[in-house]
Amino acid sequence: AQKVTQAQTEISVVEKEDVTLDCVYETRDTTYYLFWYKQPPSGELVFLIRRNSFDEQNEISGRYSWNFQKSTSSFNFTITASQVVDSAVYFCALSAREGDNDMRFGAGTRLTVKP
Amino acid sequence: GAGVSQSPRYKVAKRGQDVALRCDPISGHVSLFWYQQALGQGPEFLTYFQNEAQLDKSGLPSDRFFAERPEGSVSTLKIQRTQQEDSAVYLCASSSSGGTYGYTFGSGTRLTVV
Image (cartoon, rainbow over all chains, first blue to last red; front, side, top):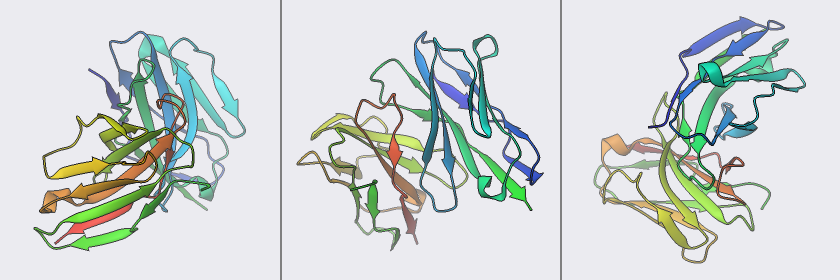
């Protein structure tokens, strides 16, 4: 069975603080793909990153960075020097096997960045 | 179009009424997905199309839910005899591949059944 757990329901930080959003996943597949999406108040889900299970290299994109650790089945997301515009709900998602069309989402973490 | 377009943006239906939700995917995107997002939850898979073929409808919660994509572009999600538990945001997404490269989502249709 595939499952994604985002234990943090809500996080509130002050602007310029660093914040890490946790994601833990479960799958029996050896090939799988992990994603992070951002859902701003407007409602659409914005794709942030995709990672396959064979690539454990951490990734940095501007203020965003992702830490993928297969040993702990985690794919955490860090925002450095947070800004008010980062306020949104963030979803971690898992899709197993090439061509699998059933992407499983976590329940999401609502991030509020206060000025 | 430049993105995935969904209409209407908001829909209020009386219990028992039929509704139809429309999705215009990105031009040329082969794959189209429908998700249901309840308040405070992550999106839940409903159904998947590759061109006009509905390859997976395992997520549709009941036979009151029906989706089609007759010409392989625009898709319609129809809910018959709506019930209060159908109240949710219905998200459509499209992809040029099977989906493992990430989807482009629309803004969704918020359905409220009263």
